[in-house]
Image (tube, rainbow, N blue to C red; front, side, top):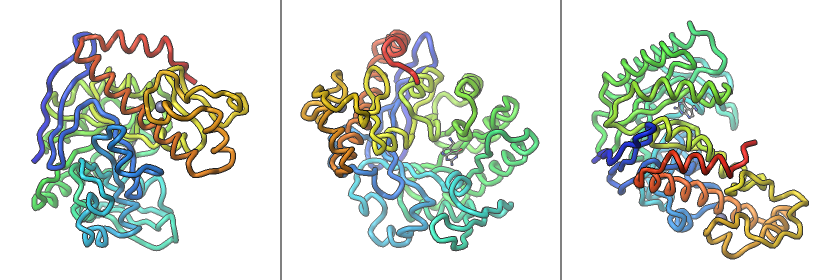
Length: 370
Ligand code: PRF
Ligand code: ZN
Protein backbone atom coordinates (compact mmCIF):
# COMPACT_ATOMS: atom_id res chain seq x y z
CA UNK A 1 0.00 0.00 0.00
CA UNK A 2 1.44 3.35 -1.05
CA UNK A 3 -0.38 6.50 -2.00
CA UNK A 4 0.33 10.20 -2.40
CA UNK A 5 -2.36 12.85 -2.32
CA UNK A 6 -1.66 16.44 -3.25
CA UNK A 7 -4.03 18.70 -1.31
CA UNK A 8 -2.89 22.15 -2.22
CA UNK A 9 -0.39 24.15 -4.20
CA UNK A 10 0.84 27.57 -3.08
CA UNK A 11 -0.03 30.42 -5.48
CA UNK A 12 3.22 32.36 -5.32
CA UNK A 13 5.70 29.53 -5.09
CA UNK A 14 5.94 25.84 -5.86
CA UNK A 15 5.23 24.86 -2.23
CA UNK A 16 2.83 21.93 -1.89
CA UNK A 17 0.76 20.33 0.82
CA UNK A 18 0.25 16.58 0.61
CA UNK A 19 -0.08 13.25 2.35
CA UNK A 20 1.67 9.92 1.86
CA UNK A 21 -0.02 6.71 2.99
CA UNK A 22 1.98 3.58 3.82
CA UNK A 23 1.26 0.30 5.60
CA UNK A 24 2.64 1.89 8.78
CA UNK A 25 0.52 5.01 8.58
CA UNK A 26 0.31 8.43 7.01
CA UNK A 27 2.93 11.14 6.56
CA UNK A 28 1.91 14.77 6.12
CA UNK A 29 4.11 16.65 3.67
CA UNK A 30 6.26 18.74 3.58
CA UNK A 31 8.08 16.74 6.25
CA UNK A 32 11.47 16.51 7.94
CA UNK A 33 12.64 12.92 8.57
CA UNK A 34 14.96 12.32 11.56
CA UNK A 35 17.93 10.11 10.66
CA UNK A 36 18.33 6.78 12.46
CA UNK A 37 21.38 5.37 10.72
CA UNK A 38 22.14 2.52 13.18
CA UNK A 39 18.51 1.51 13.86
CA UNK A 40 18.31 4.36 16.37
CA UNK A 41 17.88 8.10 16.12
CA UNK A 42 20.88 8.84 18.34
CA UNK A 43 19.89 9.58 21.96
CA UNK A 44 16.14 9.27 21.30
CA UNK A 45 13.83 6.42 22.38
CA UNK A 46 10.92 5.58 20.10
CA UNK A 47 8.57 6.90 22.78
CA UNK A 48 10.33 10.27 22.69
CA UNK A 49 10.32 10.30 18.88
CA UNK A 50 6.55 9.89 18.97
CA UNK A 51 6.20 12.50 21.70
CA UNK A 52 7.83 15.13 19.44
CA UNK A 53 5.64 14.08 16.50
CA UNK A 54 8.06 12.20 14.21
CA UNK A 55 5.97 10.75 11.40
CA UNK A 56 8.71 8.86 9.56
CA UNK A 57 12.37 8.10 10.23
CA UNK A 58 15.30 7.08 8.07
CA UNK A 59 17.52 3.99 8.20
CA UNK A 60 20.68 3.07 6.30
CA UNK A 61 21.29 -0.03 4.23
CA UNK A 62 25.08 0.28 4.34
CA UNK A 63 25.38 0.48 8.14
CA UNK A 64 22.74 -2.12 8.97
CA UNK A 65 24.11 -4.56 6.40
CA UNK A 66 27.54 -4.34 8.05
CA UNK A 67 26.22 -4.35 11.63
CA UNK A 68 24.16 -6.07 12.98
CA UNK A 69 23.41 -7.57 9.52
CA UNK A 70 20.14 -7.43 7.61
CA UNK A 71 19.59 -11.17 8.10
CA UNK A 72 19.62 -10.68 11.87
CA UNK A 73 17.12 -7.82 11.53
CA UNK A 74 14.94 -10.04 9.34
CA UNK A 75 15.07 -12.69 12.09
CA UNK A 76 13.92 -10.08 14.60
CA UNK A 77 10.87 -9.49 12.37
CA UNK A 78 12.17 -6.52 10.39
CA UNK A 79 13.52 -3.10 11.27
CA UNK A 80 10.22 -1.78 12.67
CA UNK A 81 10.03 -4.58 15.22
CA UNK A 82 13.76 -4.67 15.92
CA UNK A 83 13.85 -1.00 16.94
CA UNK A 84 10.29 -0.75 18.26
CA UNK A 85 9.13 1.83 15.70
CA UNK A 86 5.67 1.18 14.26
CA UNK A 87 5.44 4.27 12.04
CA UNK A 88 6.88 4.55 8.50
CA UNK A 89 10.58 4.00 7.78
CA UNK A 90 12.54 5.04 4.69
CA UNK A 91 15.87 3.34 3.99
CA UNK A 92 18.65 4.75 1.85
CA UNK A 93 20.17 2.27 -0.59
CA UNK A 94 23.80 2.29 0.53
CA UNK A 95 25.07 3.86 -2.67
CA UNK A 96 25.82 7.23 -1.13
CA UNK A 97 27.28 5.77 2.07
CA UNK A 98 29.57 3.40 0.16
CA UNK A 99 30.94 6.37 -1.77
CA UNK A 100 31.41 8.58 1.26
CA UNK A 101 32.51 6.05 3.92
CA UNK A 102 33.94 2.86 2.54
CA UNK A 103 37.59 2.49 1.56
CA UNK A 104 38.93 1.34 -1.77
CA UNK A 105 35.65 1.26 -3.58
CA UNK A 106 35.53 0.16 -7.16
CA UNK A 107 32.49 0.91 -9.27
CA UNK A 108 31.66 -1.56 -11.99
CA UNK A 109 28.59 -2.10 -14.10
CA UNK A 110 27.60 -5.03 -11.90
CA UNK A 111 27.82 -3.06 -8.63
CA UNK A 112 30.31 -1.62 -6.15
CA UNK A 113 33.20 -3.46 -4.51
CA UNK A 114 34.37 -1.85 -1.28
CA UNK A 115 36.06 -2.35 2.05
CA UNK A 116 34.17 -1.67 5.26
CA UNK A 117 35.08 1.60 7.00
CA UNK A 118 35.00 -0.41 10.26
CA UNK A 119 37.44 -3.28 9.75
CA UNK A 120 38.50 -3.21 6.11
CA UNK A 121 36.57 -6.41 5.29
CA UNK A 122 35.66 -6.81 1.61
CA UNK A 123 32.08 -6.51 0.34
CA UNK A 124 30.05 -6.11 -2.81
CA UNK A 125 26.74 -4.31 -3.17
CA UNK A 126 24.81 -4.40 -6.43
CA UNK A 127 21.40 -2.91 -7.18
CA UNK A 128 19.88 -6.37 -6.54
CA UNK A 129 21.80 -6.81 -3.29
CA UNK A 130 20.71 -3.38 -2.03
CA UNK A 131 17.09 -4.27 -2.76
CA UNK A 132 17.48 -7.66 -1.00
CA UNK A 133 18.90 -5.92 2.07
CA UNK A 134 16.08 -3.37 2.08
CA UNK A 135 13.55 -6.21 1.72
CA UNK A 136 15.07 -7.82 4.80
CA UNK A 137 14.82 -4.50 6.64
CA UNK A 138 11.17 -4.18 5.59
CA UNK A 139 11.19 -0.39 5.18
CA UNK A 140 8.09 1.31 3.78
CA UNK A 141 10.07 3.42 1.32
CA UNK A 142 13.09 1.90 -0.41
CA UNK A 143 15.65 3.98 -2.30
CA UNK A 144 17.12 2.87 -5.60
CA UNK A 145 20.84 2.05 -5.68
CA UNK A 146 22.53 5.02 -7.32
CA UNK A 147 25.88 6.67 -7.70
CA UNK A 148 26.27 10.14 -6.22
CA UNK A 149 29.20 11.76 -8.06
CA UNK A 150 31.44 14.05 -6.02
CA UNK A 151 31.56 17.83 -6.43
CA UNK A 152 33.21 19.08 -8.49
CA UNK A 153 33.11 16.43 -11.23
CA UNK A 154 33.62 16.66 -14.97
CA UNK A 155 30.44 16.70 -17.03
CA UNK A 156 31.65 13.66 -18.96
CA UNK A 157 31.96 11.67 -15.77
CA UNK A 158 28.61 12.81 -14.36
CA UNK A 159 26.92 11.80 -17.60
CA UNK A 160 28.52 8.34 -17.57
CA UNK A 161 27.57 7.90 -13.93
CA UNK A 162 24.03 9.11 -14.56
CA UNK A 163 23.52 6.54 -17.29
CA UNK A 164 24.79 3.78 -15.03
CA UNK A 165 22.41 4.96 -12.30
CA UNK A 166 19.58 4.67 -14.86
CA UNK A 167 20.55 1.10 -15.75
CA UNK A 168 20.76 0.34 -12.02
CA UNK A 169 17.29 1.86 -11.49
CA UNK A 170 15.85 -0.65 -13.95
CA UNK A 171 17.53 -3.54 -12.10
CA UNK A 172 16.23 -2.20 -8.76
CA UNK A 173 12.70 -2.07 -10.12
CA UNK A 174 12.94 -5.64 -11.39
CA UNK A 175 14.28 -6.92 -8.05
CA UNK A 176 11.46 -5.17 -6.14
CA UNK A 177 8.69 -6.77 -8.20
CA UNK A 178 8.40 -9.48 -5.57
CA UNK A 179 8.26 -7.06 -2.61
CA UNK A 180 4.95 -6.31 -0.91
CA UNK A 181 4.14 -3.05 0.85
CA UNK A 182 7.45 -1.42 -0.05
CA UNK A 183 7.56 1.57 -2.40
CA UNK A 184 10.71 2.05 -4.48
CA UNK A 185 11.76 5.67 -5.15
CA UNK A 186 13.89 6.59 -8.15
CA UNK A 187 16.82 9.00 -7.71
CA UNK A 188 17.54 11.95 -9.99
CA UNK A 189 21.25 12.67 -10.47
CA UNK A 190 23.13 14.92 -12.90
CA UNK A 191 25.34 17.05 -10.65
CA UNK A 192 25.17 20.76 -11.35
CA UNK A 193 24.58 20.30 -15.10
CA UNK A 194 21.04 21.35 -16.13
CA UNK A 195 21.00 19.22 -19.32
CA UNK A 196 21.98 16.16 -17.30
CA UNK A 197 19.36 16.87 -14.62
CA UNK A 198 16.78 17.12 -17.40
CA UNK A 199 17.91 13.85 -18.95
CA UNK A 200 17.86 12.18 -15.55
CA UNK A 201 14.30 13.31 -14.83
CA UNK A 202 13.08 12.25 -18.29
CA UNK A 203 14.68 8.82 -18.14
CA UNK A 204 14.01 8.06 -14.46
CA UNK A 205 10.31 8.98 -14.65
CA UNK A 206 9.87 6.47 -17.50
CA UNK A 207 10.09 3.75 -14.85
CA UNK A 208 6.98 5.24 -13.21
CA UNK A 209 8.26 5.02 -9.64
CA UNK A 210 5.82 5.92 -6.83
CA UNK A 211 8.16 8.74 -5.75
CA UNK A 212 11.35 10.52 -6.80
CA UNK A 213 14.27 11.93 -4.93
CA UNK A 214 16.86 14.45 -5.94
CA UNK A 215 20.32 13.16 -5.11
CA UNK A 216 23.78 14.53 -5.75
CA UNK A 217 23.16 17.92 -4.12
CA UNK A 218 24.59 19.33 -0.88
CA UNK A 219 27.84 17.51 -1.65
CA UNK A 220 30.08 20.56 -1.36
CA UNK A 221 28.69 22.90 -4.02
CA UNK A 222 27.80 26.47 -2.97
CA UNK A 223 24.24 26.87 -1.64
CA UNK A 224 23.36 29.15 -4.55
CA UNK A 225 24.28 26.34 -6.94
CA UNK A 226 22.02 23.91 -5.08
CA UNK A 227 19.06 26.32 -5.14
CA UNK A 228 19.65 26.99 -8.85
CA UNK A 229 19.53 23.24 -9.55
CA UNK A 230 16.31 22.88 -7.54
CA UNK A 231 14.76 25.80 -9.37
CA UNK A 232 15.56 24.09 -12.64
CA UNK A 233 14.80 20.46 -11.72
CA UNK A 234 11.57 20.35 -9.68
CA UNK A 235 9.36 21.89 -12.42
CA UNK A 236 10.41 18.99 -14.67
CA UNK A 237 9.28 16.38 -12.12
CA UNK A 238 5.82 14.76 -12.01
CA UNK A 239 3.36 16.75 -9.88
CA UNK A 240 1.49 13.74 -8.57
CA UNK A 241 4.46 11.99 -6.94
CA UNK A 242 6.32 12.88 -3.73
CA UNK A 243 9.69 14.62 -4.14
CA UNK A 244 12.48 13.96 -1.68
CA UNK A 245 15.65 16.05 -1.43
CA UNK A 246 18.27 13.67 -0.02
CA UNK A 247 20.58 14.63 2.82
CA UNK A 248 19.36 18.22 2.99
CA UNK A 249 17.57 19.69 5.99
CA UNK A 250 18.64 22.80 7.86
CA UNK A 251 15.80 25.22 8.66
CA UNK A 252 16.80 27.51 5.76
CA UNK A 253 17.13 24.52 3.40
CA UNK A 254 13.61 23.41 4.34
CA UNK A 255 12.21 26.85 3.54
CA UNK A 256 14.03 27.01 0.19
CA UNK A 257 13.39 23.37 -0.73
CA UNK A 258 9.68 23.69 0.01
CA UNK A 259 9.60 26.97 -1.91
CA UNK A 260 10.86 24.94 -4.88
CA UNK A 261 8.34 22.14 -4.47
CA UNK A 262 10.17 19.56 -2.31
CA UNK A 263 8.02 17.37 -0.01
CA UNK A 264 10.54 15.34 2.03
CA UNK A 265 13.88 16.10 3.69
CA UNK A 266 16.40 14.28 5.86
CA UNK A 267 19.60 15.48 7.45
CA UNK A 268 21.92 14.39 10.25
CA UNK A 269 22.67 18.02 11.02
CA UNK A 270 20.04 18.67 13.75
CA UNK A 271 21.10 15.58 15.72
CA UNK A 272 24.82 15.93 14.96
CA UNK A 273 25.12 19.57 16.06
CA UNK A 274 23.08 18.68 19.18
CA UNK A 275 25.87 16.30 20.19
CA UNK A 276 28.34 19.16 19.72
CA UNK A 277 26.35 21.45 21.98
CA UNK A 278 24.60 23.48 19.28
CA UNK A 279 20.88 24.26 19.25
CA UNK A 280 18.35 25.82 16.90
CA UNK A 281 16.40 28.82 18.10
CA UNK A 282 13.99 31.12 16.28
CA UNK A 283 16.89 33.61 16.20
CA UNK A 284 19.33 31.17 14.61
CA UNK A 285 21.85 28.53 15.72
CA UNK A 286 23.51 28.97 19.11
CA UNK A 287 26.46 27.17 20.67
CA UNK A 288 25.02 26.50 24.10
CA UNK A 289 28.38 25.10 25.29
CA UNK A 290 29.83 28.63 25.18
CA UNK A 291 30.63 30.48 28.41
CA UNK A 292 28.07 33.17 27.43
CA UNK A 293 25.35 30.80 28.63
CA UNK A 294 26.91 29.87 31.95
CA UNK A 295 24.46 31.92 34.02
CA UNK A 296 21.63 32.03 31.49
CA UNK A 297 18.63 30.45 33.18
CA UNK A 298 16.22 31.04 30.31
CA UNK A 299 14.99 28.17 28.06
CA UNK A 300 17.08 26.94 25.09
CA UNK A 301 14.62 28.78 22.82
CA UNK A 302 12.08 31.07 24.50
CA UNK A 303 9.67 30.54 21.57
CA UNK A 304 9.80 26.72 21.76
CA UNK A 305 7.15 24.76 23.64
CA UNK A 306 9.04 21.44 23.75
CA UNK A 307 9.46 19.47 26.98
CA UNK A 308 13.10 20.59 27.30
CA UNK A 309 12.37 24.29 26.84
CA UNK A 310 9.47 24.07 29.30
CA UNK A 311 11.61 22.49 32.03
CA UNK A 312 15.35 23.14 31.67
CA UNK A 313 17.58 26.20 31.31
CA UNK A 314 20.47 27.01 28.98
CA UNK A 315 22.78 27.23 31.99
CA UNK A 316 21.82 23.75 33.17
CA UNK A 317 22.10 22.13 29.73
CA UNK A 318 25.47 23.85 29.25
CA UNK A 319 26.65 22.41 32.57
CA UNK A 320 25.58 18.90 31.50
CA UNK A 321 27.35 19.23 28.15
CA UNK A 322 30.54 20.55 29.76
CA UNK A 323 30.53 17.61 32.19
CA UNK A 324 29.84 15.14 29.34
CA UNK A 325 26.70 14.03 31.12
CA UNK A 326 24.52 11.81 28.89
CA UNK A 327 21.42 13.88 29.65
CA UNK A 328 22.95 16.98 28.02
CA UNK A 329 23.04 15.41 24.57
CA UNK A 330 19.61 13.85 25.05
CA UNK A 331 18.10 17.25 25.81
CA UNK A 332 19.75 19.14 22.93
CA UNK A 333 18.83 16.33 20.49
CA UNK A 334 15.24 16.30 21.70
CA UNK A 335 14.92 20.06 21.29
CA UNK A 336 16.60 20.23 17.86
CA UNK A 337 14.41 17.49 16.41
CA UNK A 338 11.31 19.04 17.96
CA UNK A 339 12.34 22.35 16.38
CA UNK A 340 12.59 20.78 12.89
CA UNK A 341 9.29 18.91 13.23
CA UNK A 342 7.42 21.93 14.61
CA UNK A 343 8.96 24.03 11.86
CA UNK A 344 7.66 21.55 9.22
CA UNK A 345 4.23 21.68 10.84
CA UNK A 346 4.21 25.50 10.84
CA UNK A 347 5.16 25.49 7.16
CA UNK A 348 2.33 23.06 6.36
CA UNK A 349 -0.09 25.32 8.22
CA UNK A 350 1.23 28.37 6.36
CA UNK A 351 0.69 26.64 3.00
CA UNK A 352 -2.81 25.66 4.12
CA UNK A 353 -3.54 29.29 5.06
CA UNK A 354 -2.05 30.71 1.83
CA UNK A 355 0.67 32.59 3.72
CA UNK A 356 3.78 30.57 2.92
CA UNK A 357 5.56 33.53 1.28
CA UNK A 358 4.90 35.71 4.35
CA UNK A 359 6.08 32.89 6.60
CA UNK A 360 9.31 32.66 4.58
CA UNK A 361 9.87 36.42 4.89
CA UNK A 362 9.22 36.37 8.63
CA UNK A 363 11.66 33.48 9.01
CA UNK A 364 14.49 35.37 7.28
CA UNK A 365 13.71 38.55 9.26
CA UNK A 366 14.33 36.74 12.53
CA UNK A 367 16.65 33.82 11.83
CA UNK A 368 20.30 34.81 11.72
CA UNK A 369 22.09 32.87 8.97
CA UNK A 370 25.68 31.94 9.66
N1 PRF B 1 22.04 9.34 -3.13
C1 PRF B 1 21.64 8.53 -2.10
N2 PRF B 1 21.59 8.97 -0.84
C2 PRF B 1 21.96 10.23 -0.58
C3 PRF B 1 22.39 11.12 -1.58
C4 PRF B 1 22.43 10.66 -2.94
O1 PRF B 1 22.78 11.36 -3.89
C5 PRF B 1 22.70 12.32 -0.94
C6 PRF B 1 23.21 13.57 -1.56
N3 PRF B 1 22.91 14.72 -0.82
C7 PRF B 1 22.45 12.13 0.43
N4 PRF B 1 22.02 10.87 0.62
N5 PRF B 1 21.27 7.27 -2.37
ZN1 ZN C 1 12.66 23.29 22.74
